[in-house]
Length: 229
Ligand SMILES: [Zn+2]
Image (cartoon, rainbow, N blue to C red; front, side, top):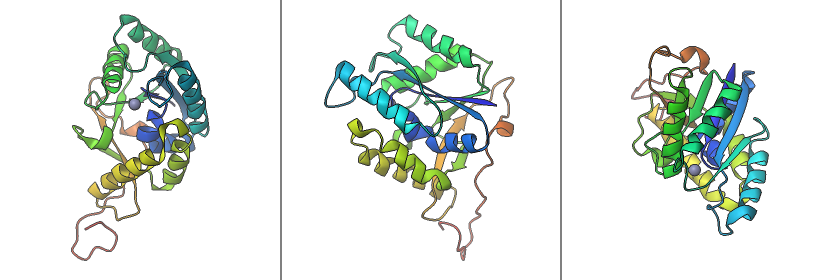
């Protein structure tokens, strides 16, 4: 089974998808990672020097999962040229994954939105797409939660490799988001979950067979010792 994660910028896979990808890796899936833009605008230094540093950070951050494929499209301008879609499509087809994970079209950053729409257009109805959470969960309605508690420390380590991004703030951010998503499933403090959205369409009406098992069901009880409430 082949899973392809596509992030817009060099740290997005770690922030939004790392836990689920770690589970896939452990399950023996072939995990592929692809980074669409060069990230040349996201830092105090700019341009090619930053892009090179960020590429090295991504290689290091993703080393336990896969060697990332860099498309090096322009940061902040993804989708402004038709050629971008062609490059993304060609690279997806080279892998022909069984599942793609990428950003939601409702996310906050224009590059994230563009990548989501380009990816959807590129694969049409041939490959199912799982959309990852948006930044702080805004405009996002999950219908699939995955328990990443056992992978939380490796996610943190991966994110800390992105030194040009002052990564401590992103560690705080993902801990907040992933603990909130776990709490939505009534998991107690100390648990972490990543949230995803899948939109069924023919022929992928139900893709549970290729996903890791859902979170443990924790019903609400007044004297529940094992739930958030
Ligand atoms: Zn991004």
